[in-house]
Amino acid sequence: MFGLPTLRRVAQEIGCDVAAARDRDPAARGVGTAEILSSWAGVQALLAHRVAHALYETGLPLAPRTIAFASRAVTGVEIHPAARIGADFFIDHGSGVVIGETAEIGDRVTLYQGVTLGGTGFARGKRHPTLEDEVTVGSGAKLLGPVTVGRGAKVGANTVVIEDVPANSTVVGNPGHPVRVEGRRPEGPDADWIHLPDPVADAIKALSERLGSLERRIGELDGRGAEGELKELRPKRGPSSAGG
Ligand SMILES: CC(C)(COP(=O)(O)OP(=O)(O)OC[C@H]1O[C@@H](n2cnc3c(N)ncnc32)[C@H](O)[C@@H]1OP(=O)(O)O)[C@@H](O)C(=O)NCCC(=O)NCCS
Image 1 (cartoon, rainbow, N blue to C red):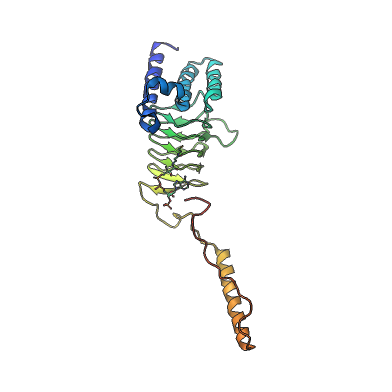
Image 2 (cartoon, rainbow, N blue to C red):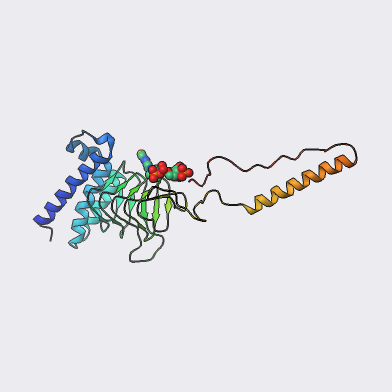
């Protein structure tokens, strides 16, 4: 039942969550607990979730969903009352965060605004992501399906994660792929997702070069020199739109 031990646990979790905001949001340093509770949307959403989840676990109908609904209306953060969230959790800014029913979040996890921990279809059972301890997920990232994000991993802003993420790695892009594992660039034939060989561009470049040399040869034969000018093809430089 919803007794004194549950209240004590919820109070402890709230204390940890306020401390997490102070620890991970530079803007919250030196700010009093009352001010954080009254104006940090991510902290308010979490506070509401702690209560909704405790009620949900007692089997009480209606109230958990009503709290979650009211919290979403006020904070813009939607957390299903069944979602499991560990200690020291922090949502920075809050707005647009969605955490699905079977999502599981470890300790000391940080989410930025616009993160989705969502499902991929209408399947029942475990269908939302699991985030292990000390994971950071950047703004706008979408993590879809029952994927596991390993301990200490970082998910870059706007990344779309559809596969498991190794511990202590950084994943970016769509689809999300590791660009750092244990602080080092991944090695191997599949490691560079951005500068992949392009056989079609290579074939066009070869044809263009051949056409240019034929035109020069014809120009020499009839004594007029090369006519027209073929623009030389150069490999594209600069950052790829695919990220990375
Ligand atoms: C991913 C992130 C956490 C950095 O992690 P990191 O392990 O320190 O990684 P690095 O900065 O060394 O970047 C690794 C590579 O990924 C690239 N990268 C980093 N973030 C990226 C992103 N969001 N999308 C695409 N590529 C990204 C870097 O350019 C770098 O590329 P390189 O290997 O070609 O040099 C950070 O870039 C990020 O996205 N943080 C989210 C912050 C946020 O949401 N803030 C909102 C505040 S309101």
